[in-house]
Image (cartoon, rainbow, N blue to C red):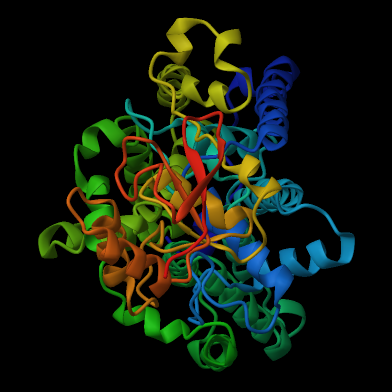
Amino acid sequence: MTGESATLRAPARPLGLFESGRLLTALRGAVLLLAAGAVLMIVRLPWIGDMGVHAATVERLRHDLFHPGNPMVDSPTDSPYYSPWTVCLALFAKATGLDTFDVLRCAAVVGLIVLATGVRRFVRTLSPHPAAPLLAVLCLLLLWGVRPFIWSGFLGLTSLSANASYPSTFATGLGFHLLALLTQAHRRPDGTGLSSYAGYAGLGLLWALLMLSHQFTGVVFTFGALGVLVAAPGRPARAVAPRLAAALAVGLTALAVWPYYSFFALLGAGGLEEIHQPLYRAPWALFTLVPLGVLALAVRFRRDRRDPLVVWFLLGLVTVGAGAVLDKWSLGRTEPAVVMPAQLAAALCVLDGGARRLRAAFAVVLAGALAAGLWVQRDALTFVMRADALPKAVTRDAWKVWQTPAWTTRYTAYGDVFMTGDLGAARTLPGYGGYTVEAGYPDFFLPDEKQRAADTARYFAPGTPRAERLALLRKYDVKWVLQRPSRGGLPAGDPALREVRKGPDGRVLYEVLDAG
């Protein structure tokens, strides 16, 4: 069976319950309820995960669009966080004068809209059934495992609740739009529209925008694009290959000329394995419900060995497997290339998955799995409501949202350097305009990253001589020390420090008076 016949075939006769207007209304209600939760989450904008580095990125660009330097520390280095998306956010911030966190709220709105429309558009290329996009959204959010987790580029409800304002959400939506446009381009037998050279050049630019905005997500959807190409109708290769070559050339050129960082230098990035190893620990707990989608993929594979979701899944599976075999844990970030096609296949299997009774049975199992997934990820409620307003059954395993150092901005100035041994403070202070001695996030573009970490540890270590501590403050032109009283460092009564204020989170802000 050809890719064209598999992709364009009329769907099997829908189940009676999916012909019911009541069920469609229920599905729409469920998605709208999740959307309402997303609105509340955007208002609260929970401080967790990578929020600090994304806020800092916007801060640096809005202050100096052409030479922003490192987002976290006072160093004139490049950063892969300076993507076309964050540059647009900074331009929006400069044009409107909005606070950085209000800009991130706007980013979350746009990112979720791009994601929702992208999923709908791509699913429409796979099935014309009106329930398909709704079921796809629910499967993408809920069909995960028994242990919720948060990673950029992973669409679980808990993860997305924390990551909606991140570039990965925008990039994921962009990726679904890319797959939809590429599918449509290969369905046109003429040489017009997206099938023209200009159309393919546009696809190349879209791919480059995706790769620059979030590199791991770019790889995931590159696999998806390859799946679409493998499943494309049987047009003559000599007619398609030059257009694809033109698209690739345009995309690679855009990657090469991006001025804020060297994209191709990322290929030699090191130091990323340890932080990604958790993605390979207990995968049965992280992806417990995904095998249901793998079963649906098997059904699609029996019908068409060139099915785009199957090819996408297999490419992701090989890459993730290679990471496990080679101890390249960073390849775990391509796990969405395994999970998302399985989730989409599960949604479509109910609507066009073979015999009516089998589809009915699968629908019952899928409904139970979605209900289980919703319960497992109930902790997402803590991102939209106060913990004391929720039952203990919901908040027992809730993620802890960080206390922000916003109170320090009353005393400090943009660009001041802080010495802090608190990881939470190191990750949040740059979002309010400050710099820290030690970068709060891994950064292989920062040549003295390890030295900065060692100097910070040395400053707070017991027994470090006073003269050495003062020398470290001078080395980095430190103006403030933010620490908990028991953390170490110079004692509170040292003449080089002046206590300014005790914060609501127990940390104390000291001004550095004399590091000479």
